[in-house]
Image (cartoon, rainbow, N blue to C red; front, top):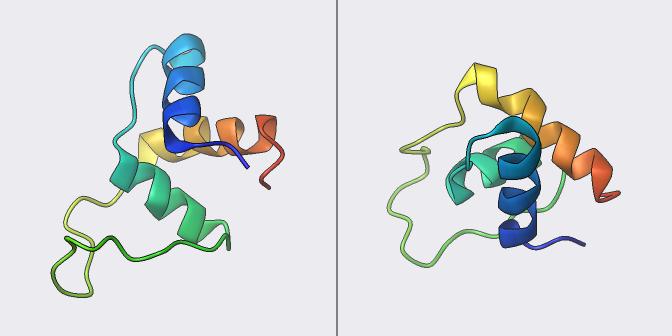
Length: 68
């Protein structure tokens, strides 16, 4: 299981942007992977959901690390 930092580094290297950790958590949830609730999260709704154009690069990183 890759860390969020490893996923961020891989996406930065291959797609030239650094995803926010909340974007990674959102894509993990969309992919059916377990996500724990952050202790500082307020409410149920995501404040910063992943933009549609960033979902596929993050999914590519999850596939690379064998998470999906």
